[in-house]
Length: 394
Image (cartoon, rainbow, N blue to C red; front, side, top):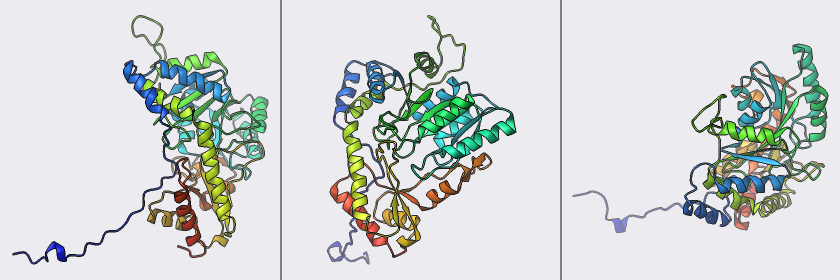
């Protein structure tokens, strides 16, 4: 006979768990299913197809470029851009230190060496004055300038493009743009990603629009995009048989994913509006709390607020990690800013110019939940936790 009491005598304690709030989850419009259904109905389920063609055309029109190639990821796009720019082993490539590792890894894919540059305070993107110093220093050390410049646009805000363009023109450096996080933002009314020789965008699941995974390579040079399409489909030559004269990759986007992208692109303006509304809510509700600063919106263009990012000072009374942990205890995802590349074991040996700004942003910065589907209740819950943690140290 069991020593356990009958079930009706047992008090069961049920812990209520609030729903998970993610940092930046996908937000479907409903249009995606229509395009995906078309792909199934017509049996266009393999890579390429009418949705890919339409998505490329619609995307190029939206950002204001002449040509676009839909790919499996933004990383694939940057890899192809470096190849098309002629970057080879022994070359150097300038890039931000404060960025996601996918901005830098493709430099290593082609055997080149990253040269890391600190951020400026106005946008948290690369510091043009430090970039100028770095170029002169690399010329003194190597007898030639870096081969390419990967200009990264962070968190939904364009970098200061004009001085970087000027530097690249003066020194014969090829300008490439990583606009993976900046779709919908502007630089003097023009889309970042369209100033350089090639630009890349990402549709990863956490981006402002998604294809579940995917990217886009854009350029005004049709020959470059045609070459990118060839390289992204295993570099098959024109022949009735399979023939190859250069190394290619399996980087093309599927027709199904492109259908998702078409449905997402149609509602991009609404998604930008919702993200900016999140930021406005946070700023209004938290402005009276000491020790909280928000990522500025630079004077040169619109910030999409893909992510709403804050900096905490000592006056807040708790660290950004204290706040992140407090969020996690309440089933809410928040995330530190990107850990700079010069602090990463993988890239700590690279040449680094500056560093104090990126170090400070990483030490104090936190990305708040920023999804375009956040409800008023979600945002109140998030703000309530910030208020509770402020001044408590936990």
